Length: 382
Image (tube, rainbow, N blue to C red; front, side, top):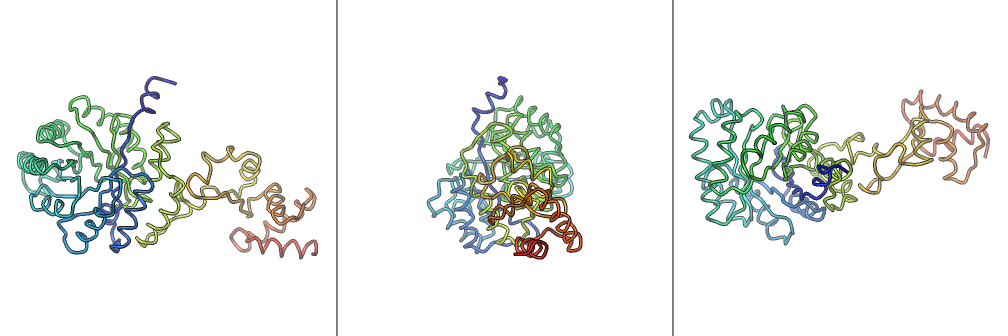
């Protein structure tokens, strides 16, 4: 094992889940207060280190939900999201959080067109907010919104000012998801070479690279990763909690000790609560992750699951499925009938397979087990 790999295995990576804040900012998504509390408890049980619970200054139900989460006795740190405004931070303090995120744009396009101000104003407001939060004993994440489109010299100036004011980490936001893993690695490496400050990766999935970019940031030295369950988030979403944790474990050799067997259950709950589909093809927790239809794949998986599975289905709360469809082979067919105590010879399996494929084409889908039994009875009798 290389020295770099050994160092990575020994690193402590902090998972920051923002399902209840950025996830709920998905267009059209609203969590009921009881759902927010249940999701927070799920995240805590999974092993999430810090939960970004919402935006306290919104008041009303948002504040009530955050207060309930803070009083739930969770092991995870509870964070409130804020603009660099004193009243925002006061609202967070009133909810009982132990950490605050202070967010402001750092890209010139945001400063000019959204904030309609100057870089100097951005630095001044950020420093004032951080100093106030620090006096109140808060753990502080300073969020550089649109960091990926920010001038690097200014971003370094911003990070230094944040550290001097008392910030504990910099959240590097790829707000519109325009990075790739190669540029991510270089940018995070540059920041860490110039400023001694913890970095959190906050990546969006507009080009389908949120998880890859988060991992590239970790490889470059970032030690916090922002995620959401099933990748909920604005537009195309954020890096998915289940993808990041499993990729760290199996690809980077960093086992965070999460209860990964809960991933499917939590994904289903968040899917229902958000009114968002949990696709069968969703990485890690989709029902197709361990479904095998192709004859070659099914045969390999039956002989040794490792031939076509990167990890065991039970590890994420799923089960292996052998699907009988147009692309199935005799090995899968024989295995399926063996589940019902019926031994199919190779000759009979070949005969039946032709009928099965014909039915699948006409129905445009795989067959249910009962349908297989009807075909068997029609062809061979009871």
